[in-house]
Image 1 (cartoon, rainbow, N blue to C red):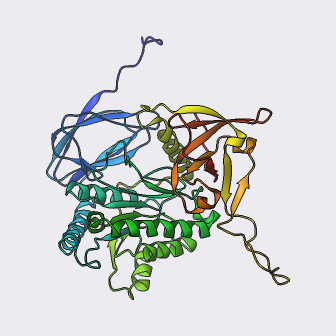
Image 2 (image 1 turned 90 degrees about the vertical axis):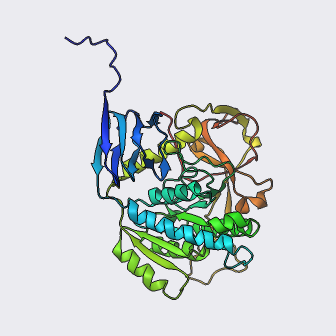
Image 3 (image 1 turned 45 degrees about the horizontal axis):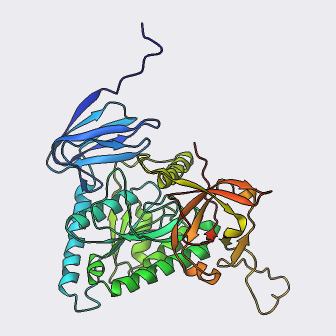
Length: 432
């Protein structure tokens, strides 16, 4: 007879033996974390080597694969949603890509005196949703960092967000292999707030932010030969049809990408190969998507965005202590970007409808509609700097007291905000 009040013990442990060039694919359960460690041999996650004997704790709902080149034994809790060993992987083809990029970086470093030749590879990873773009990007970055390079990671995927929160485009140098559990911990990333998880809301703003980010990186590279030779890896959205395809072409052109890695779709490869053939310096490479990639429905994506926001404030391991602060309405100025007719010196012709201005800065009245919204804190010191300024961080609106004109928000740390200017999109979060 089982005692209904007795606490359940920890999950049983099991060992999984991996042969060379195979991988263990894992889906962590929805409601519990997973502990595992490398017992013997060598193995890596997203291109980052696992430390021997050290326990790693993965959060609920995470999906990843442990790959070994020469063989390994993994010890893990027997409480996953799914885990299985695969002996057919895409890692060898990814390693071949890395070798070519490594050669180009070395060539760029050797010709640093030549401003044109010293440009390292600018790699853009494209493909449909759930083709493994983020995984390939992280792997290539970690392999490069392991070789001593400091490649720049550019994340244009506003749907999920690997550098910061969803709804942003961002860039940061990668100086160390990426932590397989904690992810990327940038010190001073360049972040621009789009505010939505799809570009269809304001494609004009999306294009402007991509261009702004590319121009700043161009200036930074001009003054830093090390970053320039290391090049960049650009992750993109899974939105590849219609507007999404046009935005892909815009990103390739704006960042002057010279390597286009196409994952998981023959049609997209053929289209890009055709349109880019007039740019002989651009290599379009077709790669198979990893067999371990799992399709994610809208509900899962929404849950992943919510988890990403929670991690921003509380940390992956709940080791951060965010602070709630009460401020006066008058201490803050909230804006949204886009909407309203474009300014015009004269009225439009009869029958012609004015088009919404994608870059119009619109003041937002503080009221209960802001409740549970995540707002971006601009670095701008004056209103006319908002459109060209990047983001210092984020706050979450916990309460709005209309009679007292007080607003309560959660921030990663206490103290004054870097600026009173806040940007609003459609990013919401309910703390559970």
